[in-house]
Amino acid sequence: MQTSEIDPALPRPRLAVVVSHPIQYYAPYYRAIAAEGSVEIKAFFCSRFGIDNMIDPGMGVEIAWKADLLGGYDHEFLPEAPDIKGFAFREMDNPSITARLSEYNPDVVLIHGYAQGTLARTIRWCRREGVPLLNISDRSFSGLSTPLRRIARRLILPLILKQYAAFLVIGDSIHRFYRSFGAREEQVFRVPIMLDEGFWALRDRKEEARQRIRGELGLSDEFVVLYVGKLIPRKRPQDLLAALELIREPQDSAGHKVRVLLAGNGEMLSSLEERARALDLPVTFLGFVNIDELPKYYCAADALAHPAENESYGIIALEAAAFGLPLILSDKVGAVGPTSIARPDINTLVHRAGDSRGLADVIVRLAEDEELRRQLGEASTALAADHEGPLSVRNTIEAIRYALKSRKGSRTRHKSRNGQPA
Image (cartoon, rainbow, N blue to C red; front, side, top):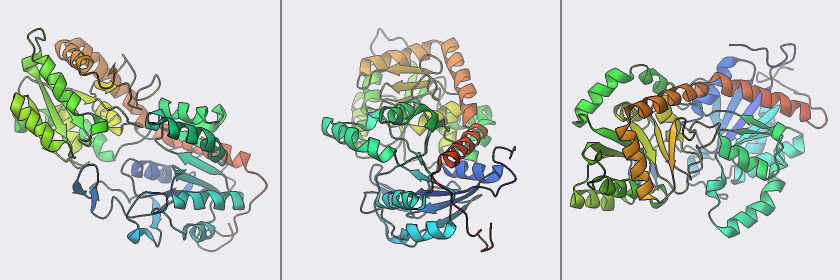
C-alpha cells in the first residue's frame, strides 16, 4: 500500500478513536488504517458490548459477535468499560477518557456519534487541547421521527458540528444530513463502510456455497427473498408476509415460486410465525443468525429485501451487494442514494415504506425477469468493490490531512508511546 499521503519526513500522525464498543463493521476499517502505515491508530472502547455476551433488546437473545473485532490494530478498554451497561448519554460515560487521551497525546481524534457522556468529554478535551476532531456516524434524516426532535436538533446540532474539523460519511443520506446542519462540502469525506474479511472470502466461493445451502434448506427453483434484521415494528417484516399474500393472488403468476427467508429475532417473531402458519405462507424462519453465519444465507438468496420505515443506513444492503444480490429496499433506508451502495434502478428497486402492494409488485417483477436480476446483481458486485478498503483508507488520510491543516495554533507531541521525544 502507498504511504505517501502523509509527509514521511514528519512523525506519523497519531489518531485516537473513541467509540462506545467494538463494532463489527468498523474493526476491518481500523485494521486497514493500521496496515496502510501512514497513520498510527489506537481505539479507546467505552464498554465491552460485542465482546462479552449481552442481551440485545431488539433481538431478545444473548449475543456475542463471533467476528474478529480486536485483531490487527492497537486498542484498549477504558477502566469503566466492564461496568457500563447502556448506551444512553449518562450511562455511556467514562471520566477516564481525558487522562487516557492526554497520555496518548493524539494529533487527531475520531469519535463515533456525539450523544454520549464520554463523547462530550472527548469534545471538550479536544477543544481545550487544540486537537482537531473528526466525526463518523450513521445518522441520517430517517432518524428524525418527530417534529419536536427535528426542532431540537435544528437548534442544537449546528453548534455541535462546529466542534469538528471534518466528517467521514458512509453514504448519501448521511452526507446530506451533515450538510443540512452546517457542515461545509470541503469538510465531508466519503468513507465507504467495510465488511469483515470473511464476507469477501466466502463471496469468492459463492456458487459452491449456494448449491450446498439451498440443498440444506430444501430450496429448489424458488425465488428466494432474504430479510436480515430485528423483527420489530420499525423494520416492518410484516410487510413481506403481506406481500406474499398478495403475490399468491391469481394475477400474480410468480406466486408459487417465491419464498422468504427471515433471519432475525425480536418481539414480532411469534405473531409472524402464527400468521405464516395460518395462511400457509412460504416463509422460513431462521432465527437469530450471527455475523459469521450470515454470508451463507446471502449465497442462498436471489435478492435482499429491507422494507423498514426508519433505517439510518442498513449495513445489510452492503453485505448483500457484496454477494451480488439485487436489492429491494424501502424509500426510508439510508443506504439508498445516487452514489451510495444502493442505487435506484442500478442495483436497487425501491418501494414506498409501508406499501405492501408496491413491495409485492417489485418482488414479482424481479422474480419474473431473469435479465433484470442479472443486471442488478452485476451492478451490486461492482459497487461493493469500493467497500473493500483502499478508498476508505485513502479518504480517511485525506480527512486527517485536512484536519491538521485547519488546526488552530501549534501543538507539539511531547512523547511517543515509548516515552521518548517524537
